[in-house]
Length: 145
Image 1 (spheres, rainbow, N blue to C red):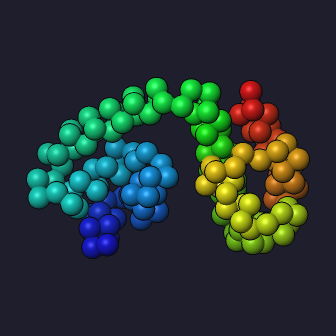
Image 2: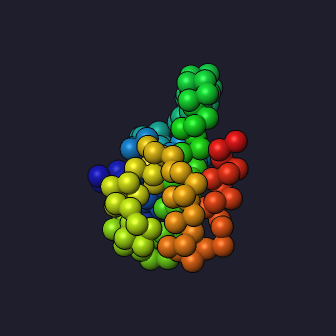
Image 3: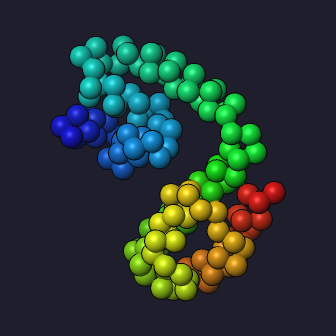
């Protein structure tokens, strides 16, 4: 935990970005990697090249795994990230969002974490719950295919 605090304090990288990268939810940006390397490594940013090379190898390997299922997982992650971003922008908890959309907080969580890709009806409900003009319906259609 001390390294995370050091990484956040010594850079412009948010704590959320660092924890998201550590949890494997998102691939870290070069800035996030740099902050993490500086915080954990005695060598500091000199190890950045090694981290970036490792990240590139991992991305290449992940791109070849999963076939069509990988596209569906990517779509679910993109939809979930946008739902989370809009929900937070509107200052709603998952429970309040679920109530407004007529679903459960657990389902909202699964969608936001890319575990479940919602139906078009769900997308329409999210638009209604947040007072948006079809953003989620359009996103759903674009990601579906």
